[in-house]
Length: 379
Image (tube, rainbow, N blue to C red; front, side, top):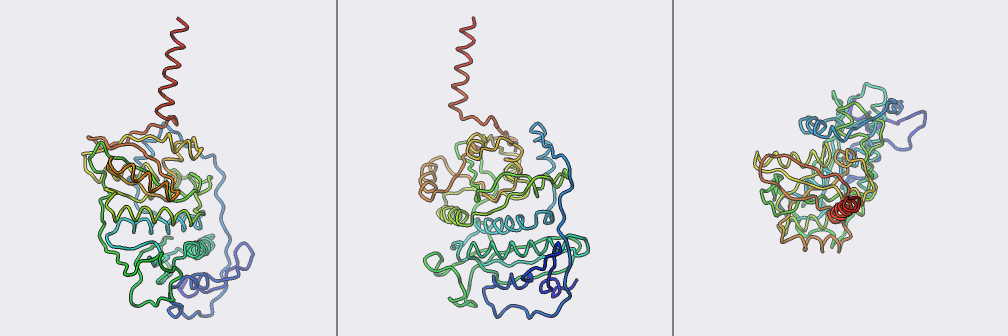
């Protein structure tokens, strides 16, 4: 299928004619409307959505080590077609979070995205999935008040979306931008080098902190773990709070530029635990971490530790010095941004040890005392 026909053909999905073509939706996101392609006449694309195969999904907490071995070694993957809409929004947020770590001076409102879809067009359900991906991209970029510098589509052996970020330059006019000052930088710059390492720094007093950048549920639909285990009956995380993402981004970017963050990484394929393991592995064999999920379990009301560790909710893991903890706490509280202190690095092998009791340290101590008193009473 040629590029022009996939972007500008009329679509009929599940027997319902779609109001707009993918190209028309994406054109609304272009920063310069005069850069859009001229639509050509194309045949209508007929397709239908595909549903997950009925199966009993089962993830066991005692298999977490095995799950981690699978996810940390998995190669970069395609878009999960059953969840192409939500996953596209996840990819957009990931691309923006990836930019957080780069050198330069910019804010979220300065960023522009370039989007390129490569798509296998021959299977039933694939073009419906592409339409859902383009629709989700258009709607979510609008909700974030961000624009595309360009977009493209090409036929290929797999279904994927590549996103890259840049900042506006002299080729753009002020009226091209949806974001007004002071929510942009006067002379923004983004450099192709990272400001901080993604590897955990070997400082046992420092803090590893998790910042989820959306309030979506911790579900495993569309996750790398579900794909590797060929289980897909769960729903996928669906980013739906762009205002909160913007608040998170602003406070994190300020901390990056102020050198409060000494290491940082985007929560990507495989979720929270896989990202932590990759951060430890990037430090060689020198450092691991011991983390607790107690606060996250309580706040999210999610008791399934596998979901918390492997769901791909967009977010960041940062490392800060112990003396900066109070400053970070105050800044996040001021911006109403939620964060979860996970724990500390541990010198030695790059292992991640997880405490998933779901109880605070004080609660555990109290229960220990109560059990001790009960035992004495029985005697």
